[in-house]
Image (cartoon, rainbow, N blue to C red; front, side, top):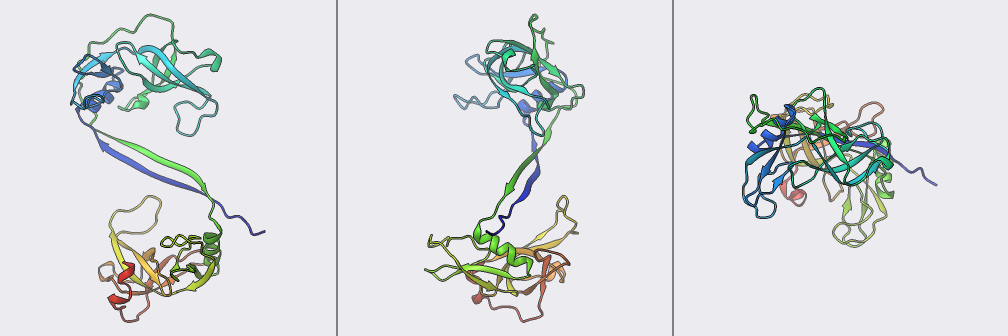
Amino acid sequence: MPEVLKAPLVVEFPFTRSLGPVQSAFLTGLRERVVLGVKTRDGRTLVPPVEYDPVTSEEIGELVEVGSTGTVTTWAWNHEPRRGQPLDTPFAWVLVKLDGADTGLLHALDAPGPDSVHTGMRVRVRWAEERSGAITDIACFEPYDGDSAELTGSDGRFEDMVTGIVAPARLDYTYSPGRAQSGYINALSDRRAVGERCPSCRKVYVPPRGACPTCGVATSEQVEVGPRGTLTTYCIVNIKAKNLDIEVPYVYGHIALDGADLALHGRIGGIPYDQVRMGLRVEPVWTDGGRFPDHYRPTGEPDADYDTYKELV
């Protein structure tokens, strides 16, 4: 039985966004240990605050302070915290209606076990020791049986307002290719490129997908293509990517390998970025021990005629 290929993969990027006046005040308030909501025209106080009424879509912006104590309205126990979650020991996810609010705020509750959590229990905010103007300024909630917290009287105006945030987005998963892609990957280790031909339309797809995306029928006939190909279209990259040791600017393009009916992507090297052009004939460049081409370089052949690759642009 052939080996089942699999590999851990991570998709990660920083999500940067600017803040409007409502979110700016809310996050700045957390930095100052103040929780703010926004009041709708019909008198409801929404926490966390939003800029438009979710019922009427009316723009809203009247900020009001609510308490840092509240009541659990619903909850779920988290037996195995994951990386980046508020606590590294088992905890409860809770919706807390803070005193003075009409909606629930989702956060973590530090509790000794699920038997100690119940709907209706009183809790209070545990503030983070270091605060920067983010939801993580609330470290978590904790059980509380005292009086409601006193308000500070804040009107939502602070010095040095938070105007933007950077939120890291990350997805960790294990990828396991199917039969067709496993054949493609294994061929690359021998410095070959293979695709699969559709039995109906006779097009050759690289990388193979196990089925024709046009006809919807299964593919199994393996066809070796390339190694040379034609650059169909490209872009010039001017922003350096994290953990990618390539100096900018560089060119990334779609390459139609000879014999293939689908262009794959790759980096173009061996030529100044401002001399790269559509129709450029290229070939793969392999590094020692590499399982896939490091980049593609010009072959020195005359450029391909546009009519030969226009369907692959």
